Image (tube, rainbow, N blue to C red):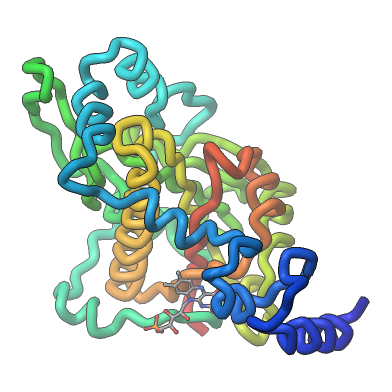
Length: 303
Ligand SMILES: Cc1cc2nc3c(=O)[nH]c(=O)nc-3n(C[C@H](O)[C@H](O)[C@H](O)COP(=O)(O)O)c2cc1C
C-alpha cells in the first residue's frame, strides 16, 4: 500500500464518522475520527484517560498515603534509592570545562528560535559541556528534612523537578564534537561525566529512527543530538500516574535550557518529536516503557 492508498482509505473511513455502527470494527482511525467519537465506548482514549487518572483531588487519600509512604516503606525507599541515574556507571569521560555564555538572559530568550539547518562543522567540547551542565547539571546541594523526620542530602539541578526525583536522563549522540569519539553517551550529573552507552553504529541506528526529510530538518549537518529519556517510575513510585506529568514537565524545562544556552553560544538547536519510538528506543537499548525516549533536541553550527 502506498501513501495515496492510505489517504484514500482514511478519507473513506472518515466518511463513516459518528454515524458508523461498525466503529468498533474499523482498524484505521484518524485522530479526527477519534475526536469526533470520544463518547463511543469502542474508541480507546488513552490521552483523555491519562489526564483523568492523573488528577489530584481533595478527597484523594490514595495519593496522600503513597506520598507519605515514599520515605516510610522500606521497600519503596530501597527501590527509589536504587533507581537513580548515577548507579551502575560504566566507562566514562569527565566532562570538559564549560564555555560560559556571556549573553544576557533576556537577549537569549528573545533570540531563541528553532534552527534546522547546520554547516556540518563540529562543535567544541566546551560548548557541549555548557549545554549539558546548564540544562541538567548539579548546581548545588543542601540537607533537606524529609517527611519521616530524617535528613537527606539533596543535589539540586539546573531545572526544577517534582519531589527532586529527576525522572529524565540526558543522553547525547555525538556526531561531530572536537576531540570526542562519535557515539552515544549518558550524561551523569552526579559525576559530571559522560558515560559510554553506545558506538558510532548506534548513532546511525538513532538517526535511522528520525522521520524527517532533509528539507525539513538537516540532521546530516547536525553535530549532536540530545536525547531526553523519561524514567517514569522514578516519579510514579511516589506520585502515581501524576508522576508521568512530571516527566514531560522536566523534558520541556531541559529542552528550553538547551535552546537558551544554544542561542547564547551561537549554536542552532531544535526540538524534534518526529521519530519512530521503537527504532530510537532500540538504538539506545531502552525497553520503551520503563525507560523511553521522550524528546530529541538536534543541535549544530547554524548554516
Ligand atoms: C514538543 C515539540 C516537538 C517539536 N518537534 C519538531 C519536529 O519534529 N521537527 C521540527 O522541525 N520542529 C519541531 N519542533 C519545533 C517547532 O516547530 C517550533 O518550536 C515552532 O514552530 C515555533 O518556532 P520557534 O521554536 O522558532 O519559536 C518541535 C517543538 C516542540 C516544542
